[in-house]
Length: 165
Image (cartoon, rainbow, N blue to C red; front, side, top):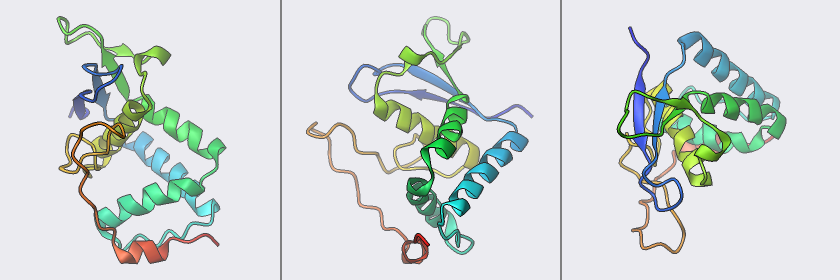
């Protein structure tokens, strides 16, 4: 069976507006190694990984809160590997022509963050706020005339379970 793919067009105002990115799922073995490295980095950082009873939303909340406890040296290769799943479609007249991402292809930080969330969602099937699969938008540029993002309740079980040792 073919790898899952997702087409993401950037709609936010800014230098990336209108750009089209193609995300492609990595093999399960590669995704498993990525997750194992991430979980080991979290465990070394002293984060309580009691997520077995948290449910999907709780796991998402725990993962993103726990990332703050990983060292930059551990986090950088994980972030770089996520970007390896993303290609760009530079010419709308040739939709089958996609290219590896170059440094100047993504010019806004918020675009990078959204694309990482889309990659995570593609691999896990878990809709992340701000992704095309989720109903909850990520906040965009402060001061812009966008409606406020809805408040998302975090499970108390996860909030109490995350602490540094």
